Image 1 (tube, rainbow, N blue to C red):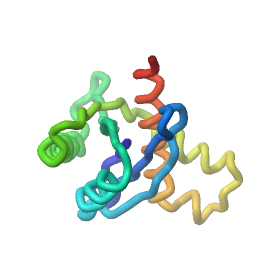
Image 2: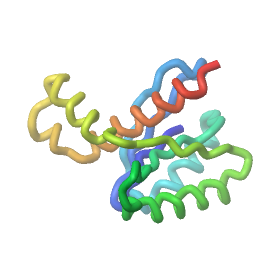
Image 3: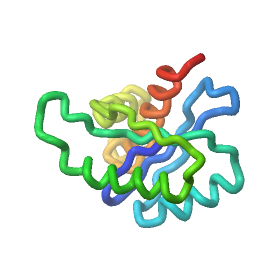
Length: 134
């Protein structure tokens, strides 16, 4: 399961049992994310978590990085048996916006930040899958 964490919303993505393809799950309010993940993990098998992380790349630390660190600590506390992997989320929002544009989605839907968050989570998970392919 992958997360594109934000202070207001969290984009979620999951993969198929063979770990071949990332699929957008949904975008939910940040305040409900842990309840959602608990319910999801009770219903579906989740092997690990991939969390988009804003690596600085020579710049000062991203302001949301501290919030993501707290989010990761809470995931580790609630799900001690599941590894949490930080995945570079550089440019995922720009790629997600471009993906929506190229898919022919109307302007209102392209501006919906929830759609961008969900696609960003998908990109984070796809990156994780490619990095951990056996």
